[in-house]
Image (cartoon, rainbow, N blue to C red; front, side):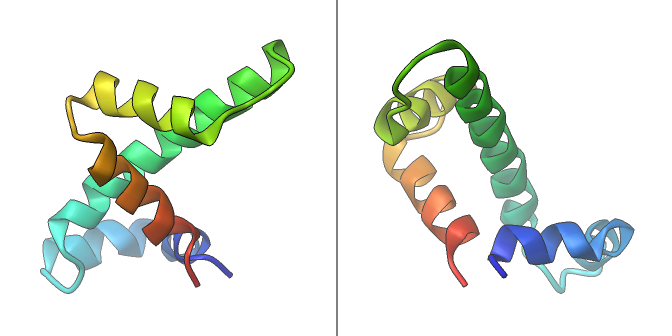
Length: 81
């Protein structure tokens, strides 16, 4: 089970835990970035032959005005166990 799957399983409790400072606020931001990454990846899988992880990361980093390095860290964190 990945960290992202664990965060999803928390459901409404995730926001409560962020509110109580048990989970850092930046994890909420990272969840938003990662969900955008997944959505963009799914779109490219449907409409293009090849999906490049680096290209998806560049797109999301540009959309959210964050560095590519940050986005690589987000993907690595969310896909980690």
